[in-house]
Amino acid sequence: MENKAYKMYVNGEWIESSTGQYSNDINPYSGEVIATIASGGELEAKKAVDAAQAAFPAWSRFSPIERRKLLYRAAEIFDRRRGDFMEALALESGAATPFCKFQTSNGPEFFREAASQVFDVEGKIFPSQNPDTVSMMWRQPVGVVASISPWNAALLLALRGISFPLAYGNTVVHKPSEAAPLSGGLLIAEVLEEAGFPKGVFNVVTNGPGGSSQIGDVWTSDERVRRMTFTGSTEVGLRLTVQCAQHMKKICCELGGSCPLIVLDDADIDYAVNAATFGRFMHQGQVCMNSKRMIVEKGVAEEFIEKLAQRAAALKCGDPTDPETIIGPLINQNQVRKLQAQVEHAVEQGASMICGGKSDGLVYHPTVLVLTEDMDLAKEEAFGPVASVLIAEDAEDALRIANGTEFGLSGAVISKDVNKAWDLAQRLESGVVHINGSTLDDEPHAPLGGTKYSGWGKNGFLAIDEFTEARWATYNKKPRHFIF
Image (cartoon, rainbow, N blue to C red; front, side, top):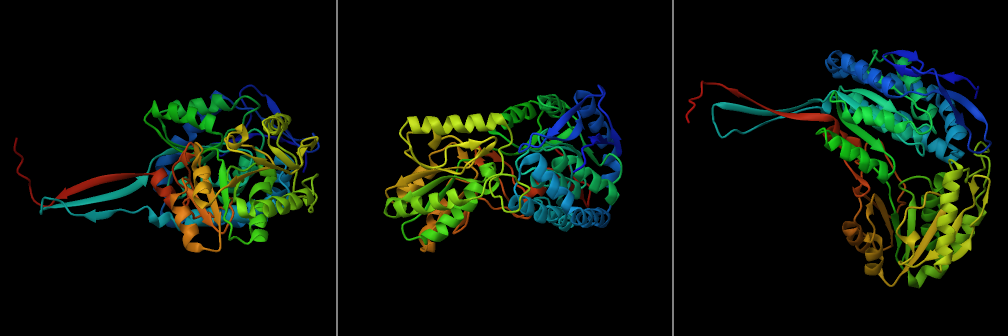
């Protein structure tokens, strides 16, 4: 990828920041600068809202067919440029080939799924207690939607926050993470610009290190921004939620997770290990839906732990641009330090380290720990390739352990007894659950979303509830007699 300077995209134009400052987009594996990115702030955040607000009246009146054509065109352009996104994901977020392929194959499907929903912005006629009154409800776009996306699944999580609001007739202001500004925003802007989206309908504001809150604070407080969507840490999500509440503004949040994968004693252990390896170590364990805790019935725990450690130790680590690499670098040195401290503290508390526990630069080797419930790491979210195994007495004990967390994003149950697994799945406190699958799964149309401190709001075919306004209207066929 050519090292060049990228400007922000506001009102159909590529602009510099008011300060003229740029920050470096750094390859976490090599430490090389792959691009320089305009560092926006409050002024650019307001300019983006100005543009989106001005574009909204015309865009909201675009026919559904016109919006659908533009979204399909964007998907076609994305398909043609898939290699550009693959390269950007690998170089700026450290994503290895499997995760790059997963994101770029699903990426255009978000545009296509959103395009399929343009006629779902519908209403209904429902009875009135007055026989001469026609009572109805319809949905309409809310206006300007602000989207803030993270670095870990930079492409997919950005597209999810962008495509659905646009399909319903909203305009969007978007801020990608400063660690993945190309794959999470600027390359998407190039696609939508080429597709022919009108000026101001989609805008991207980028920032340098430490500048995220300046932009977020503008968007939470600006009354013209009527909805927000955020994917990221629980800490930041809570702060944004409070700020939005102060302005009576809805926000759709997908936050942290401590996702449990329950393995019952009748499970096919080789299959369970495959699911756990995929679910825990994809993208170095830096996905909110990664399987953070493997909760295994004691009768099969020894076999599961042994085989999981063998698989983990065999995963190739290193350069994410090498097609054979599975474990690339963590996003930065702070993440490595935090993960290493969590692992060392767990060992100090008595955890058994079966493999791993070391790093080469930012590449942290796959690690398997056996924990007990009282250890801190059994309650925390480890954002790296560390598989924590907890041993349960039986299925009910496994469910109790699984639910013993403030998070509730995704979960999985692996068992040959589907009825038993289904019963556990119904009682698992998570927004998503997969029977005989991995906790790590996503489809553009699926209503993904968390519970508890993992967030609120849904995506996929339920995104329409987040980014449209339901309105009630009546028509009186005859003059009504009003009395006090």
